[in-house]
Image 1: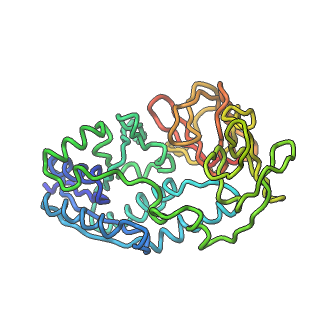
Image 2: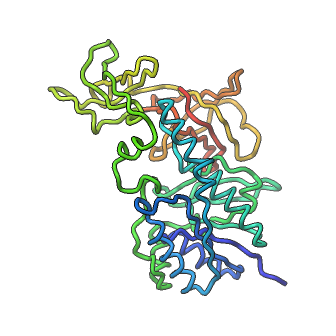
Image 3: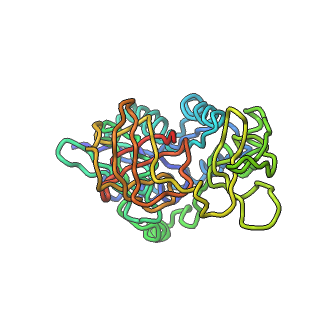
Length: 352
């Protein structure tokens, strides 16, 4: 009987390396695949990461392939990234990359290689519940990546394995060291690949026009000049350049019509607190919406604890989340992701 074939997305990092290791040990027919999603190697570690991925494949004695998805990435992810910033919102390209590239273009390619499954190094878990697949948080609460995967559907999840989802990061590194993997001590990648180490403003200037304007308090006092609304996000403290005494200044809002950046003093300012949010472009893991009502938790940004909330559906197809406690710096363009305990239900893009 033929072994099930799984194509592992080998990124050159320790998580995907250990994923391949575990699948090999579990008896799968493992193929490694390195995805190149951006053409500008000057500001992307793709070349170094490919060398590491090939080294891992050699050590594990598995077949290795590299595929270039940069055209798909530019069309499906980067174009959206720019249009969102131009509209004054703050998008999360990692979420779109997962749904459009890693679990769509990559999945399609893997199926063409005769794969039964794809696997990645994400810290998340898939659980079968009858005919349905559920997406669960990763066991390591500090590394859980289910937030970034909320747009996946049943067809994608049914062909996906997350081999390290049940492990702590420390356990993953220990397994890598024990196996002698060259990525065992490699630092985790951070930030967006296509921006790399260069300043964010410098990158955006290459694609979007600069339109400076006033920084104003909610009561209309001008306190400075902004360099362009696209460079700022709700809750931002660094880089505002506002002097004077008193508490630190924070971005609290944007007025696109008047090209005005709204700023306030103090982390606890009421303008930074919000008891509700609206979201659209909804995506539900079960491919049907959960019931309206209370008892849910939600994240309006990745690095935060679940916030208790009630879910309501609006006539225009959007949702409203009403929070038990006000949330800080709710940001249009980011994703609101809904949970029932450890189960990720799905979510949408924050509009207000």
